[in-house]
Length: 326
Ligand code: F6P
Image 1 (cartoon, rainbow, N blue to C red):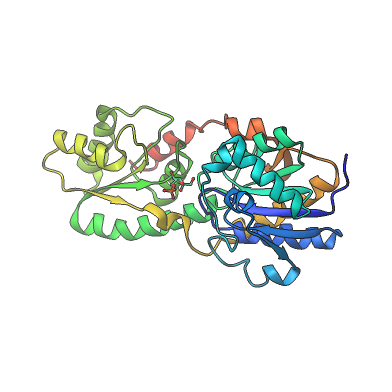
Image 2 (cartoon, rainbow, N blue to C red):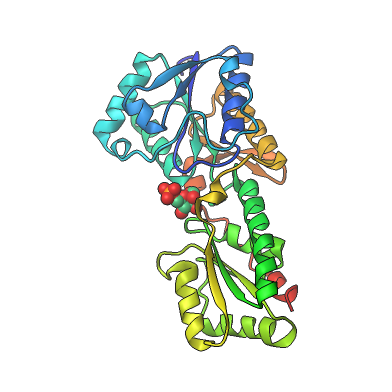
């Protein structure tokens, strides 16, 4: 196995709060352990187009508290082609980079898996996504901050919902996963959570709303995970409005606000631990793994398992939402 001297770091896919804390941790623990570091701009795009910069300890000063990513990010179509990856590899070699730390979600780790297999490059991934949709880890970097952002927004909506006696459908992100929806519903005391992992019939929802609206409450909030197949919150609201034309139903789509902002302490600590663990993993000869966290402990997750994302959704939490909103 060739000796690693220089480590390249990049962020790819959707930005997530805590990515900067991860970049900082990767850079500083690499330097501490005797490696040199290069920052790759705009994810894989920067590898393909040779946007590579020297990184020193000062390059990551004063960023732990910042949302977004100082390395910028992109979703790169060229890297999905063998020609694009060849350009990336040639640039990487010319820059003297021996190993990569890739911070991103499932698309980014899929790219890492293919690249590592094709060119036999040591790559370690960090789970950077608000969606929490990666296998082998209890949490991803950015997920806790996004949950808190949703919570703050829904708390505000609750004031209007209750003052105007309205029914609100609040759409949250999550890609194809319902973690943000389900857990923000618990955190905000919402009446229901709709997730892509489970079919929700209008009848079921009607029952929930009836319970809330007719029995003890005069307002209700339903958190709906984005879902192009069903039309998300707007699609659901349309269907429900047909059944209950008397309700004053409104739709709020939280959108990219969920990706922004200063990371929570939980995300900063997670990113710091995972960043340092990525360098330790590379030093120990680990390859093609994502750093995960399980029951508070750092674990190495093969890319294939991380991408497969088979951790499922905890069905008992739906019961919790229902029970606590009677
Ligand atoms: O993966 C993060 C995420 O915010 C998803 O929740 C969402 O589906 C997607 O990215 C949106 O991507 P874009 O910013 O490219 O529209």
